[in-house]
Length: 132
Image (cartoon, rainbow, N blue to C red; front, side, top):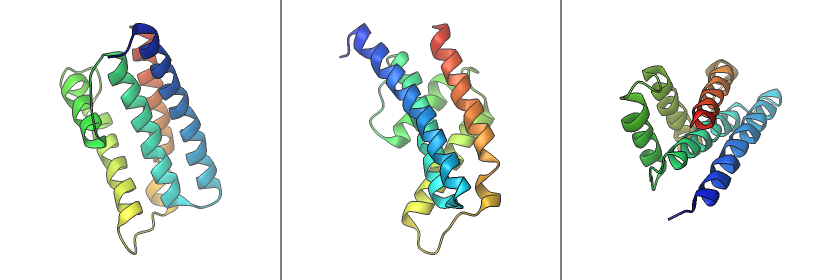
């Protein structure tokens, strides 16, 4: 069990990590490493999602758990949209496919439109965390 100060520090860290990872994704895109960019976009959204869960004292033990808890506690309640849930699922699928499937390489047209969506998602999470 985390103390209040530990929880705040961890939430801050995860949000900072989300922002840093988004920058990494953009850097990968500028070098045409689109599969790696997709990976980093997923992790940026994942870190922000985990920060929101930690802020609200919701435990998740896996990547699927984080996405499930986001859906159950924030999408079904209308705090986050169904489109945001679909974004998380899409990013996770892209990350898994890019990391584990043979002969799969994401291309610019697959990834480029996701940068803005992930940035908006992270900013929304930051707003939710700051408002609590």
